[in-house]
Structure formats: structure tokens, C-alpha cells
Length: 157
Length: 410
Image 1 (cartoon, chains in turn purple, red):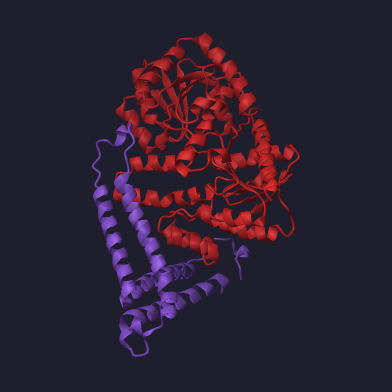
Image 2 (tube, chains in turn cyan, purple):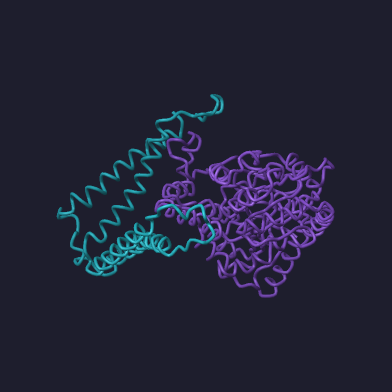
């Protein structure tokens, strides 16, 4: 079997295992006694070392969302561009919704972080994990399910 | 002097970046400079004759669905920078410049164990990796022909949906370029208009910007001696690029007599098709599709006038090429075009004014003597200002200035 396919299988099995683990640990098994859901019970240093990076990444992503919305709202159509004058454009309304949603999410996140709420950490952690592991899984599947397009002699063993 | 050129794409057949790299490296080598090139794909095949080429990987997977990628590409996705590329491109980000600069930074760490360089010259990347590169103790300069703000504004102006605008904003890495550009040792741009533009868009200190006019191959672009056609206009450029102002070009054509014809060197794409129909000039416009250099030179030499209807130009290379082929130019005074075309070599009109464009074209079509005089002066101007040896010599002067300043501050 080509080495790339072996890596493909490893990626798929590993990502499926970790995805299942993340979903179970965050959403299903959170009430097990083994998992410290009460974040007030852990030390200040321990809490901030976990929560601060997650908060920063989440605020960065939400900040990009807000910036996109704000930029769309404040775009000035440079005259003269007669081609687009007659077209209907609802993007500013959608951009306002994006700004409101990202701003509300960011405020809730910061407030949850301040209160040491479980979901303020769990949801960003779950989203980041699912995006990265989902990408690993998808690439792995793509590698497993296709054949090399190189001539036979040039394929790796 | 030992120079390291750093460019995320290198083939001279795939855009201006590759052309710049090809000619600049060749001319610098001709001036006795030892040139190394760190470059991403498509690679510049013939550079090895005068430069040492170091090839960086890049899978070019932006807008490519995972299932549509060739197997050979898919199996490379798990290497660290390729995976970063993959993840970001899934969110419509265009990370080629970011990841190329980081690959280049790590590659240099090993290369510098074997070789030393006096200066690093980045070409239009302005990626994050250039900042830690300064830690190697070598001055870093970058060429920016024009800030991408102009391209982004043009795209945003034409995007009529929320999704279109969102993906446009994600595509352009302006935040990175602004942050990095301000922190490099020098920025080279191709026009005085560019200095102002870079100051406005990226907040770069004007004193840190040097102007070196773009180069062109004046031996390749020279009049072929073919018979000139009458009332034949030529436009060279991407008709889908809204900065080219083709709307005003076709509108101007509709104001000119029926005998005036226009040849467009580009594919017949959606935007242009709609516009020629709108202005009723379908029968008077011919689209050549993509052409090779020989055909382009022949077109420049045969057509009566080159017309540039741009709303903005970072330089305006077609104008310089036409001038080198002794063809007069009617152009808008947009961006750097007014620095390329002067009153001796063409007529400048305000951008976005189809009537003024038509008037200027008519004036030139009616005056054969003026056309001939402008053509002769155009060739001289191109040779003296826009030839690659001139551009390379001026670039070398900038290198010397930067290195001297850098060493005196150490």
C-alpha cells in the first residue's frame, strides 16, 4: 500500500476517535464526576492558562466577522461605476446582522469567561477541534478513496 | 553584491510578478550582482542561466475543492504549511503570500549557513515571514507596484451580494501587507503616484519609498515595420478588471464614426460581452484572446492608436509597450499613467469621461503628422526610461543606499 494511503487511514481513524472523544467529553460526559465542570474549583493559574488562549482565538475569529460586517456597511460605491447602479443590494442589511451577532457572541464569551462558565470554554474548544479534526478527516478520506494519476512506474511503493 | 530575490510566483508566462523576476534577475546578473532566487510555483524555468534558484512548495489549492484535487496534491496536504494553506483556503482566505513567506523564512535559516547575502528583495509578497527574516541581520526591501486596496475596492464596488463582498474581504491580505510594509527597510514602487498611494493605503513613511520605473524589453517591443491600419484602435488588458474602465472605452467607441474599429487583446468575457451589446458596437469590436509576444508586438505596430481607459493604473505597461513600438497613446490621467505617457507621446484625458476619450481619439485619428511625431518620441521615451537595464541600474542604486544606511545604523 502506498505510504500516503497509510497516512490517510491513520488520519481518518485518529480524527474519528478524537472527534468522538471531544463530542463525548464536552457534550455528553460533562456530568461525569471525573470531569471538572465546575471551573471555580480549579486554581486561577490553571484556569487562565486554559481559558486565555481559547478566549483570544475566539475573539480573533469573531473580530474578523465583525470587521467584515463593518467594512461592508461602510463601503462607499466609488462613482462612476454605472454597471451596478441598477442592481438591488441587500448586503448591508446582512452585514449589520453579522456585526450584531458577532458583537453579541463576543460579549457573551467575555462575560462567560469572567464568570468561569463551562460553556464559555466548551463551545469555542469544540468548534476549533471540530474544524481542525474535520479537515484532517476529510483530507484522509480523500487520500484513501482515490488512485494516483502518475504513470505506473512513477508511483511510490 | 549578493542579492536574494524572494517571490511567491516565478513563471514569466503567468503574470507580471514572473516577468519582473525574470528580467530584473537577468539584468542584475549582467551588472555583476550574484543573484539567488527563492520562488514558489509556477517556477521560472530559464533563470538558472544567471541565478541560483531555490524552489518552494505551494499546492495552489485556493478555490479547488478537496475532491477535485489530484491525488499527488492530496497526499501532500498533511505537511505543516500545506495544511495551514488547506485550512485557510477552505474559508476563502488567500494564504499564498503568508505561507510562502514563512516557508521562505525557514528555508533561509538553512541557506544562510552556506551563503551570505547583502540584501533581501521581496517582490510583492509582504508576508509575515519577512519580519522575522530581518532578524538574520540583512536589510529587507520589497517591491509593491500598487497596494491591493485598489483591487479590493474595485471588486467590492462590483460585488452585489453579501457573500461576494464577504469572500472579497477574506481574499485580500491587506492587514498583513500594511503591517509588514511599514516595518521593512525600503519599499520600491514604480511611480510617484505609487508613493502617495502607499502612504495613504498602508501608512508607509514617504521617505522609506523609492521610485524605480517598471522595466520592459525594448528589444522585443519594437516596431515591426508592418503597414499601419487606418482608424484601428487597440486595447490591451483584462476586461473583467473594473479598474480598466472598459465601460468608458466601449461608450467612447459608440460616439466615434462607424469606420473606427477596436481590437481588444483579451478573451471575450462576460463583462465585455454585455457592454459591447449595451453600446451597440458588437460588429466593431474584435477580441483576439490571449496572444503571444510576437503577435502582440505586431498588433502594436499595425494599429493606429493604443487606448487606455483605466480608472486606475499602478504603472500602465501596455502604454510603454505601445510607445516602444512607435504607436501613439490616448490614455486617462489615472494613477501612474500620467507618468508613463506625456504630452509628446500621447493625449491624456480625465478618467471616466467617455466623451473626452472619444474627442482625443478623433483628434489623433485626424492628424497623421502628430501620430508619427508622437510615435517617434514614444520610442525614445521608452528606451530612456522604461528599459530593463535602466530599471536594474536604478534598483541597484536603491540596494546600495539601503545597505549603506543599514550598516551605518549597526
